[in-house]
Image 1 (cartoon, rainbow, N blue to C red):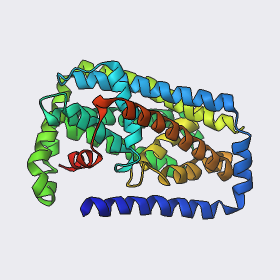
Image 2 (image 1 turned 60 degrees about the horizontal axis):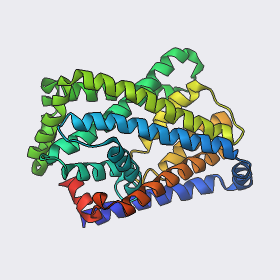
Image 3 (image 1 turned 60 degrees about the vertical axis):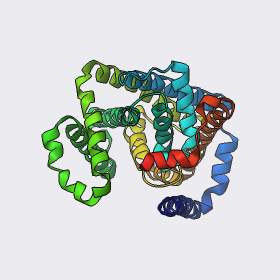
Length: 323
């Protein structure tokens, strides 16, 4: 019953945001369709290739992290799992639903269920932290060129939150200060403690963490390049700084409850890029971004359909994520 209500809630959030956005953009439909019609197929294809390369590079990072838990996987297997994750994002909570599917599959290869889940969580955290720290570095380098106080304050806030999250993960004394929250999560207390201890042990894998962050930088640069190509494909222009400081905010907002970030991603893209390229152009870019995610999702779905080793029961995967 709880899962059903959660799903209904996510659908309502996504649908409501899309309806509101469509209403706000009602006078710009002609402009939006015109931009989409004139989209450069060459640049869109380049964006798709760059996005796919970003996934492949991130899969190298995930493979290293998984193998640190003595779970042996081939790169082809991890890449396929990453693509399948995009497919499962359409059915599971927010944009991390695919991570639950990855953890579920990996748990069948290793002896310790929590180790597989920790690997995927650490991989996700490193990717997210890299993006946020790159945004902060870009903001520092840009100085006063990023004048929007909302963007500056948001980046400072998520950077501070990220630093606190890192401190929480590596310092048990600091983490213990927040143990009172377990009172509200009593049924999950033991599992949460076990999960924390597994993730905490990664601080001893310093070389692994360094390599993972370096790989993440390459992956994120490809991701940023992909989105820049989408903007260029409709004839608009933005600076590298604009991409570096705004896209991470869109990505963070897309993690909030919804169906694969639908509505949140499009709305935040219009809000953050509209002042630079116009709301109509920004909405067109968000549609092209959604198209790339849809294409990747279809590829993941096809891999899932033709690869019996990846077969997963959606109900079991969902229960795995909350058990």
